[in-house]
Image (tube, rainbow, N blue to C red; front, side, top):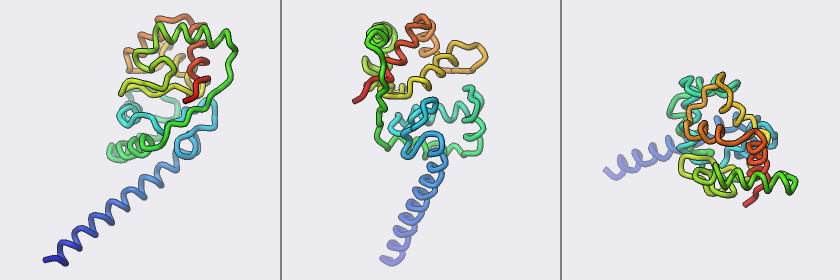
Amino acid sequence: MRKLLLAVMLTGLTSTAAAQTKIEVLARTCNTCHGTGGVSAGTSMPSIGGLPREYLKRVMKQWKYDERSSITMGRIVKGFSDDEIDALAAYFASREWTPTPQKAAADALAAGEEAVRRVCTDCHGMKGGDPDIDAPPLDGQWGKYMAIEVEKYLSPEFKMPHRRMGKAVTEVKATEAEAAVRYFGAQGR
């Protein structure tokens, strides 16, 4: 009986280790755009390491099921099962969020701080590092990437299903949105 129990336990450990190895291999395919461990080195690609698991899972499934527009990601995630998406979300959520603070002029920071205070703090926190559970951190996220996302929310051509964010971007002028993006991008921990 003990041998049978030990065999069952070892089989479970082996399959868990194999599943983890498979997700690590699958996650490496994300490194090309999102950087090692999800820390992007490209200004138009978001860092994803340390983003909330539920947020990552929801966005990837929105792309997979054509509920959210994308140029590239929809094609990529369509090849993943829902279980693989869940595992990838858990994998990247388990990484540490690593802000990449970018320089911004003092006047842009002041204007951005005002726009953030008025429109963004409820979801992302004042410096972008204290987000709601369903919102990503924005402190040190690439400014160029965030500006592209704001443009998508403002464009009727893109499906962007997060209604609260869609409403928020319409409450600021383009110059304020640009300043808010610079402000969030300039924040570190």
